[in-house]
Length: 270
Image 1 (tube, one colour):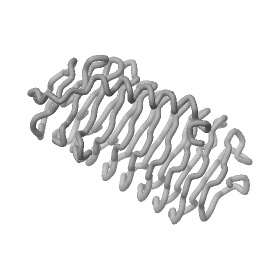
Image 2 (tube, one colour):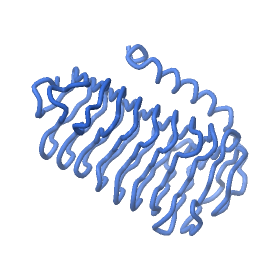
Image 3 (cartoon, helix red, strand yellow):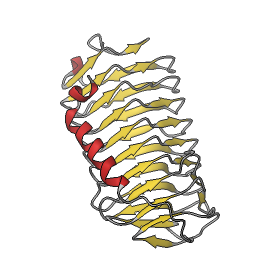
């Protein structure tokens, strides 16, 4: 059923995941503060209090890094890991316990896109845990929580977020400005003020996510005339003000279907 709902994005998820797997090796090589990676490498120790900005740059298509359950930290500013080029790959290791912390931005997607990231914990950032500026990326099985800013900001189009956890951020869980975004099977709760803010996004899908206990709103659609968006099968409960909000009158341009919620600002929200 899910593949039928968003078949285009499902294809890109499977394709990118398969391509990304080609670049991962099991050979641990020395990676240091300030390095630029253009081959497949595995982190063999923590990198802490690194003043280089970014701490590590990964350039695709051949650059990939397995954090191997190790951690990276900045000195309160700068970028932790910067993905550049095309098809850069970043994984956290078998236990998915690797953290990128104490940065301005923990993880930044840039370059030509088609990057793949899995198993990362982005935390304690002063601006955002994750910023996605390029297109056609996949972020999966990743936690962006406890940031002194936004959990995830999306500027680039055609990006997929699957099974992400975004909690306890002080400036919204997720903000998206981009078109053709897919966010599915994710936990976006206990953020301030909103779980997700959908700004100028068109033709995007928000499927089977949970937006609970945010200080004001679970899902908030700004009244900017967005079109072609689907909000299907989400749960939004116990948010501080209203669970589901669509400021485009009569839900114009959006399909709200099969959502579980306690309150909404429009009767057309289902």
